[in-house]
Image (cartoon, rainbow, N blue to C red):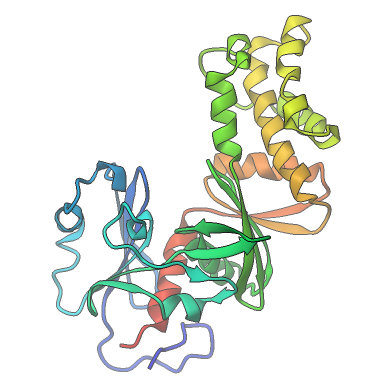
Amino acid sequence: MAQPSEGEGAPPRRGRQPAWIGVDWGTSSLRGARFDTDGGVVDERAFARGILTVTPGGFAAVFEDCFGDWMKPDGTRCLISGMAGSQQGWLEAAYCPCPASLDDVSARLAWVEPRRIAIVPGLSCEHTGTPDVMRGEETQVFGALRLLGLDSGTFVMPGTHSKWIRVDAGRIEAFTTLMTGEFYALLRQHSILARTLPPDDAELQGAAFDAGVAHALRSPGLLQSAFSVRTLSLFERMPLNDRPSYLSGLVIGEELRTRGVQGGEVVAIGAEALTRRYERALAQCGVRVRSVGAQATWSGLWSVATRIAA
């Protein structure tokens, strides 16, 4: 019988509980955490062993090399989130359709080794007949809900493929993916704009970033607004080192424009450098931001662990 997590009216735990470790196995990185009996993280590890570095059939060996000692105590279990459940991963975990609660996701685990190692499924949803998917972000959202004491809200997860997620009464109702980070990289490195930009990005130039966001919000679209990087350079109206920040503001501003974000509150989940940019950009839309970092993954995996039968 699944047990509720501590802090949710759970009775005192009795008897020996299984030890848990959590693993976040992405495209380019591999992270792990070992939990105590209350879900606190007592140890963490990170490796440059994302799924793209693993040869076919080599996942078990990589896992053993990185976390075998953690798994030695009898009864230890492991939950894995992220791209390890993709077609290129260890074991494909079928997507769980939205709307999906924590219990729905926990009931659809893909067990690599029964009662020992399981992969958390990703989520899917439909937009006017077109599918959208996520892997790993769902775990972070459930973790953020637990950390912040929420059961509803709007969440943004900045990155190469940004996610906007709507949660109601503890269920992920729907989400949308926007290729914001990837479009920045394409424009930055492979478009005519690259000729007007410095070889490397400097630290964020706040005023230039804000100007990019503002221009995107009042523009009809990125196809038009992006060309301003070139024209501001031609007319020498923007210093060289400001231009990457301005372009970043343009693509993030375009994301906010297409989402029609105005007022209210958003929870941003991700690396601090990115969530700060979104907080700054969303301020122009009158939106308050609460931020959660990497601990959201561990909180989410622990939440799943509490749902699994002892």
